Image (cartoon, rainbow, N blue to C red; front, side, top):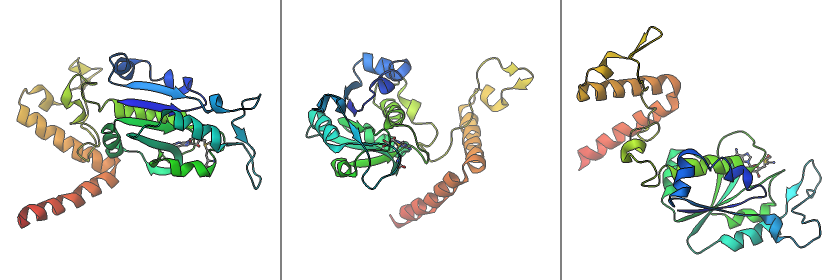
Length: 237
Ligand code: SAM
């Protein structure tokens, strides 16, 4: 997959995505990550990319033209352009799966008070990583690129790693344990030591259900609402 970021601060994305699994995905060619800086598309001596907001107010607004030119430089026919903004669709695992199916993603990262609104229609999707305000779109791009990259086939060496995990089946994942079997007086649950795959699967399903109900009742409710719909569909067939 090819990913480009339109950003004034490429290092804010490049550095955190250079280590660990995503760093390896880049080294192995699963992810090609590029940057284009609106500052390189300015024409004045000071390479100005922002200006005061019309109507007054605090902060500066990124000007449309340098962003437009930077985007034009990397946009291809099959590009999917994402504008990062706290006003966008909330990013989740379903969105990560959708984006993992694209050939080329371009992230437009705002900074300061954001970008001139006239840039918005250039994007295919406005995306937020949560209900809080970051200093810029760069940390949001890092989170989205990380979540998408691990879904690219081959990036995680065990292909089922992304199948049985939190959110994939609509529930939180059951807790994990590793050696030692007893740590500071705390034991690993018996079922996990049994070697009985059916028992382990049942224990994990029960734990996932219990944990989701306690920590994320919204997800549990959503999952329960989907169940009767699926059962009704099966009956009708
Ligand atoms: N004035 C804007 C507002 O109130 O909606 C916030 C601008 S924010 C300080 C600067 C930039 O950070 C935004 O243009 C956007 O690109 C990015 N950003 C901030 N919070 C974000 C979030 N939750 N999700 C995605 N991008 C975010």
